[in-house]
Length: 165
Image 1 (spheres, rainbow, N blue to C red):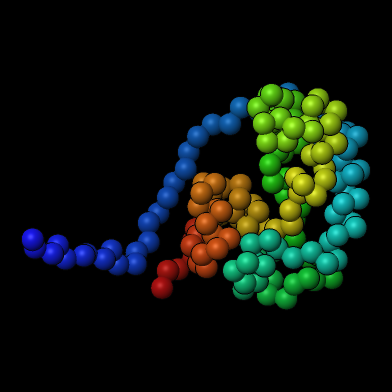
Image 2 (image 1 turned 180 degrees about the horizontal axis):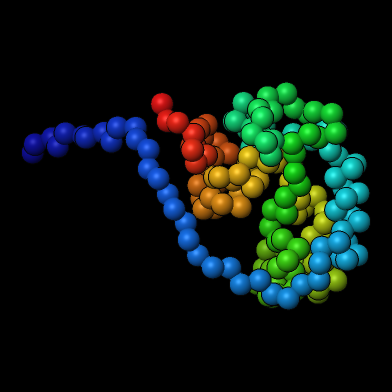
């Protein structure tokens, strides 16, 4: 029997483009949501000690604010550059949740009132920097598997326009 040589794939980059259409249900403006006060209260109560969830894992040197300025020192006064993300369900989607499907993972969410209240709690919220939230390759742009892996693999997602090498 002959040994087959192992060929290692060398490190490389690959450009990924995602394109699809989301269908949002009717929903009231965020500011009129009675639970929005809970969202703001949660942010106010926790922002001074908050850090970017991704940066906490792979290093704050991968974090930046909305203007692209590095956020290597966290926590920062007033949570500068940090944004509060709905990690499971965004406000705009609450009106179309399939309660039976949601109850498979969250059996205590038995009706829309419970879901609306839960949406603004720590179970559904996470602090992340602007880059990891809305930036190129952030949670609102990268494929789920890619974003999740970027929490544990430094430099996995390189924002568009960033020179490689």
